[in-house]
Image (cartoon, rainbow, N blue to C red):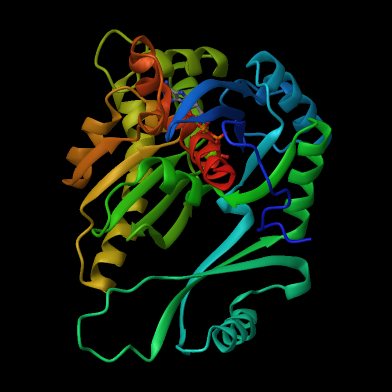
Length: 362
Ligand SMILES: Nc1ncnc2c1ncn2[C@@H]1O[C@H](COP(=O)(O)OP(=O)(O)OP(=O)(O)O)[C@@H](O)[C@H]1O
Ligand SMILES: [Mg+2]
C-alpha cells in the first residue's frame, strides 16, 4: 500500500473532512465542509499531550501510539468532530527533505526511472526502510529558449517506523486517514499565497522551530532548530523561580508585551534571539546561494501566537513579518474571526490537511 496515494475513492460531495496534526506538545484537529466552492469551518480543537506524559501543558512529549490514539479519540469527541475521513501530518523531524538536480528527460516513464534510481544516492538509509516520494519543481521557462538539461526534484523520505506509529494512533482513534503529508506541505496550502518571490516560514513549535524557504509554492530549503516554545517557558521559569505551569500561563498571557507580566521581557527575548539568529543564518545562506532576496517571513506554530512577536521579529530581520492566518482560507461566522486570527498559527497544519482532503473529495 502506498501512503502517498488516496486509498478510498468516491468521496461524497459536501462531505465533512478532518485534518489531524499530531504535534509533539499537542494534537490539533480542524473539520471542514465544502459548500458552493468555499471551505466551511465546522469545528476545531486542541488537546495538550504534556499531562499524558507527566509533563506540563506546552512541553514536548514522545508518547507511544496507543496513548496518542486514545488522546486523539478524546479530542475528536470533545471537539464534536462528526467525520472519520482524515488527513494526517508527518513531522519534519521524522523525515528527510532534499532538493536535488537531475538530468531532464522528455519521456515521463524514463524520467520516473531516473528519479527513483538517483533518489537512492541521497537517502542515508536503505530504501526498504522508508517511503519515498518526489515532486518536480516547476521552473519558469523563457519563451523560445531551449528546455534546460536538468530538472530540480524535491525528494521526500519518511521512515516506515514513523508511518506505522501514526497509522496505529489513527487506528486506535477510529479514524481512516487517506493520506499522510509532511507538515510543511499542509502549511504552504493554508498560509502561503505568494506565487513567485521566496518566503521564509518559521514554524515555532514546542521542542523545535522549523525554518523553510518556500519559492513558487515549493519548499526550496528546510532546517530544524532544536529550540521552541517549551524552551521559552523553561527559561522564564528558571530565571524567575517559577513553576513551569505558571511560567507557561504568564507567557501566553503577556508574550513580548511590556505590561506588568511577572517576568522580564529580556528573558523571552533571549530565547527568541537565539532562535532567530540561527534562522537568519539559514536566510542569508539561501540569499547568497540563490542570489535572491527573501520577500517576507511568516510566523506559524504555537510560538507564532506569542503577543508582539511579529514586531520583535520584523526589527530583528528587517524584513516584513506577518503572522499566519490559516482560518482566513475558511468560511466562518464573523464574530469568530478575532479569535480565529489569534489562535490561527497553531492550526496552520491542521487547516492545510483538511483543505487537501476537501480537494480530493471535490
Ligand atoms: N499564546 C501563546 N503565546 C506564546 N506561546 C504559545 C502560545 N500558545 C502556545 N504557545 C506555545 O507554542 C508551543 C506549542 O506550539 P505547537 O502547538 O505549534 O507545537 P507542536 O506542534 O506540538 O510541536 P512541534 O511542531 O514542535 O512538534 C508551546 O511551547 C506553547 O507554549
Ligand atoms: Mg507542530
